[in-house]
Length: 151
Image (cartoon, rainbow, N blue to C red; front, side, top):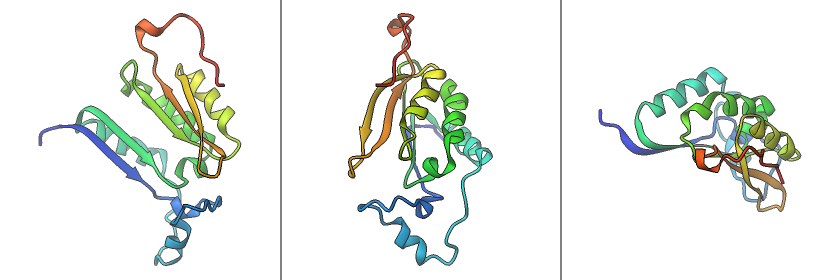
C-alpha cells in the first residue's frame, strides 16, 4: 500500500463523558442513545498503536484530533505523554495543538515548555473560556537560547 501525503484522524472515544456541557456540543445527548454509553478512556498503549500505525502510512503530515473531551478527561498525564513521546515525530517547525480543560492552560503550557516546544498562541472557545494552545517544535534557525514564555 502506497503512503499518503497527509492523514487526519478524528478520535472521540470519551466525548460524551465530558461534563462541561458546552452549548455547541452534542455528544452528551448522543451518549444517552447508545447501547454502551461509554467505553472509558483511551489507554496510552492504544494511543501509541494509533500514532505508530498512522505515521507508518504518511509521508508528510499527520493530524490527530481528539474531539470532545478525551484529553481533558484523561488529565495532565495525557499531555505529558504526548509531549514526551511524540516530539520525535515532529520535524523542526512542526506544530502541536492541544485543547485542554478549564483551568489547565498554565499547566499544559508548562508541560510543553519543559519538552522544548515554543508557545505560539493560547485561545478561547465559543464560551470565552481559555481552552487551547498552539505550540511548535523550534526550527534550528529559530533557536536563540531563550525559552518561550507561556503568555
